[in-house]
Image 1 (cartoon, rainbow, N blue to C red):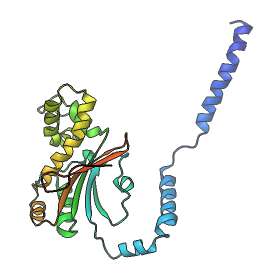
Image 2: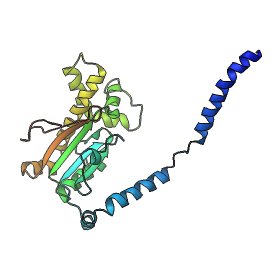
Image 3: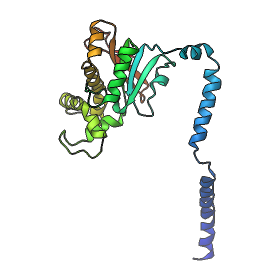
Image 4: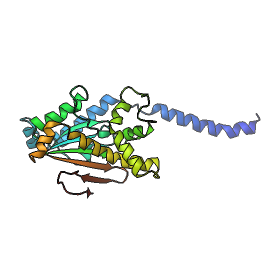
Length: 240
């Protein structure tokens, strides 16, 4: 390599060294500090500024809603719907699935539905799906219903919404997979609403008209929200 070529490379090498040094000097993410700073902000900006609300919460909870939403980190219903502490009893699960009533499995979700219905006496159960749901995408990645699972939990869980996949594929056979998934994200909510009817205490409350069951869909790509009911005499679609 002649001197001219060396001269040409020196600025490039120097810039690369500068980039690497800058990367190394970046402070690493500290999860403990993130939690500490988050709580400090909450305490000073919310807890200490609303003693009436947080004082009331010390005496109990009387939420009007039970909300079933996805565990997806991009979907925080308290944030999206501006729900305050004490307003909603919230369950988060992959693909916002409510499994059918079964005492031998899915007891975590069953316990939450039972507690919300029988003890908290919530007046509304809302199941909320969302755009770009990884669980529903996983549902469409399964070759067929009898395929051997590649995961310990995920595939068996999302297959609880298999009827949503079948319905969407039959109704929109020419749609792209992405479009089918978009429809299935909403249809899967209806599967969960139907599953809620398998819980005796939910059916009883619906018959007594002390409970309403609704489906919702939050599209964080478009910034929209839809709310609907099935055949329970609820209002038609509400789009925001």
